[in-house]
Length: 153
Image 1 (cartoon, rainbow, N blue to C red):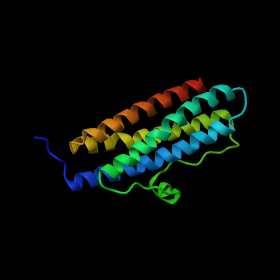
Image 2: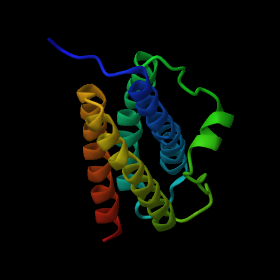
Image 3: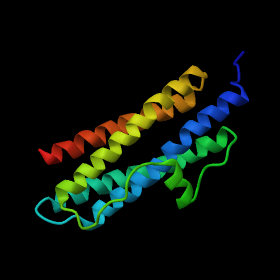
C-alpha cells in the first residue's frame, strides 16, 4: 500500500518550489531581454540559443506552479512576489553580448543552486514526482550553462 506524505512535508516542498518558480520567471525575462537586445557579431548565435531557452522555460514555469498547487498551496503569481522570492538580477538591455551571456550564466548558476537542495527535500519526504521534476529542471539548467559558456569560448 502506498503511503501519502504528510501535510508538513507537502508544505515544506511547496515552500522550496516557490523561489524556484520565481527565479524561473526571472530567468525567463532575463533570457527574453538578451534575445531581444543582443547586438554585434554574436547576434545570430545568441539570438537563436536564447530563443530555444525561453521557449523551453515557459512550459516549465507552468509545471512548477502546478506542482505547488498539487501540493496544496497557492503558486506565487505577481511580479512583487517573484521579486521577494527570487534573486536573479534584471538584465541590462544596453550590455554587450559577452556581458549578457555572463548574466545568463550567473542566473542559470543561481537557479541550479536553488534546485539541488530542493531535490533532497522532496526525496527525503518521499515525493518522487517533485524530485523527478526538479532533477529534470537541473538537467536543463546545467546544459544551458554549458551552452552559454561555450559561446564565450
